[in-house]
Structure formats: C-alpha cells, structure tokens
Image 1 (cartoon, rainbow, N blue to C red):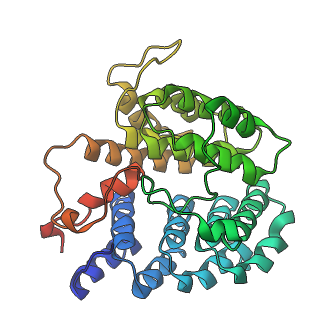
Image 2: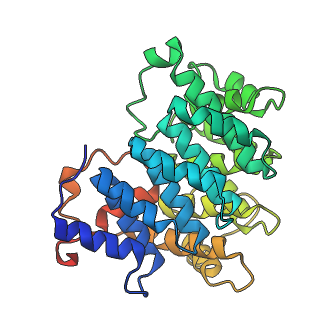
Amino acid sequence: MSISVTPEQLAVLRDTLLNTQGSTPLHERFRALFMLKAVGGDEVVQIISEGLNDPSPLLKHELAYVLGQLRNDKAIPTLEGVLVNAEGKHCSMVRHEAAEALGALSSESSLPLLRKYLDDPAREVRETCEIAVGKIEFDISPEGKARQPNPDFPTIDPAPSSSADSIPTLKSSLLNTRLPLFERYRAMFALRDFGAASKESILALAEGFGDESALFRHEIAYIFGQLCSPFSVPSLLTVLRDGKEEEMVRHEAAEALGGIASDGVEVDGAELPEGGVLAILREWAVKEDAPVVVRESCQVAIDMWEYENSTDQFNPLDSLTADKGHTTGMERSAHAAVAAGAF
C-alpha cells in the first residue's frame, strides 16, 4: 500500500533526501528516504537514483536497498550501473547492496550481469551476486512461483526462508560452511521466522557472528534489527564495539540497536555505562577514530532510538501506511519524517 502525496510534498521529500540546502542532517535524509519508499512510483525511483551521486557510502547503500524494495523494474538500470561501477565512485558496500537489490527485484534479465560478477575482487560483492542469482533462480522455479510470502515480514528478503524445521537443524545448516551460501541464508531467515520471543533462535543466529564472511555477519545484524529482540542486544554491542570488525557489519549492528531501543537483557560479562545502550551509541556517534560509516550509523541509530521512545512524534500519514511490524527501526522512524508542518 502506498501513500498519496501532493507534488509540493514530494518536492519537500526530494529536497530533504538530496540535501539541496546543503545542511540537512543525515538522519532527516534517511527519514525522507523511507517516506519516499512508502510513496513509491516511477518518480520516486528517479529521485532516489539521483541520490546515488552523494558522497556518503552509508546513504548510497541505503538508497540501493530501497530501490530493491520498491518492486519497480525501472530501478534495474540504475542498480546495474552501480554494480558495474564504471566510474569507480561506489565502494564495495554500495555495490553489494545494488546486487542484493537486483535479487530483490528478481528479473531474469539481471542474471547475466550478476553471474559476470561472481568472481568480483570484493568478497562481499561476489557473495551477494551468488545469493542474488540463487534467489532469482528460485523465484522463477515452480517452487518459487508457488511460494507464498510470509505476511509477518513485509520486506523482500535476500533468500526465502527454508521449510519450517527444528531450531537445532536450522542452526546446523546456518553454520555449515560446506553448504551453498544461499541455502545458509534460507536457514537464517527460517530462524528469524521463529520471532523475537524465541531466545533459542536468537542465540542460534548470534552464533553466525563467528562466520568468516562479513556479508553473512552483516545479514545477521540486519535480521536482529527486524526482530527487535532484547536477547540480541549483547551480541550486537560486541559487534559494534569491535574495532577489528568490518564496517558494514558494525553499521548494521548500530542501526539494529537503534531500532531495538532498549538495553536488552543478559549483557554477559560487562555492565552497561550510565545511560545504557543509548550512551554507547552517542559515544560512537562522535568518536573521532571510528570509521565514518560507523559514526554515521550511530547518528542515525540515535534518531531511531529517540523515535521509538517518543510519546509525541506523530505523523498524520501514519494511518495511510501499511503495518509497521517487523520492519527495521529506520523504516519505523520514517513514519515521523513528514509531520504536517514539514511541507
């Protein structure tokens, strides 16, 4: 279900996303992006595509993600251009997200290009292309065509959940590096489907943070952002604070913590500082020696946290949007993006 906005409102969202004034805070631009996602349509695809000229890898990565979620094939040329990266202006984190978005759009026309990059020098890019190829091939198979999406999770996932099974069996598949990455992702999303209240499935997923693939670890963090389970907070904090961890993984951990917006439970072996998880996000949001992607993700996460815990942020368009359950915290916070006086 999409939102109807006036041309003037759409222009405000465009100016906010593209920072035409030159001083729009990043979290406001993220909110505008996800409100544009709710609007949808060809014009939104064009606006978001313009944003890919921005210097921020974090923002560009999120733009590519949204293009994949719009279910609009007009985004395919833009996403393919980002993956090819002819001008060398996109880092591997952005290119990976473009490949994943092509998988989300699931057009057979993208298969030759995705297969071409199965040997890309960047591991996260070639692994994402492998998963995207697997997803498109699944989608066009008889099994894929007959499959019904999970109504509890409105996002287009990189891989369909495998058939419901026991948590120990799924955990075994998740951690089995001899299996194709696509099959391990299917187990990952099946574990997600047990929900936030299942401590056993959350702890099984958390073991995935020990995998050698940064792409795999980043997807675990993303899923924790969807679930918003307090049981995931300890592992996410460990990931965020790990200076040896890849930026793309730490970024997802930060945004997941912002969406969970609580101190969680059972923080093993360490007491939280005064102010709890929010204080840690605020620390890393200004930490001079932190990677830019990590700092910016924490800045966005703080906005998400404040939205989740606010009693007075209300968006008059909320009643027109689809169910917000099991979306990421950033997507939920976007529903405060365009209050009546913002137009």
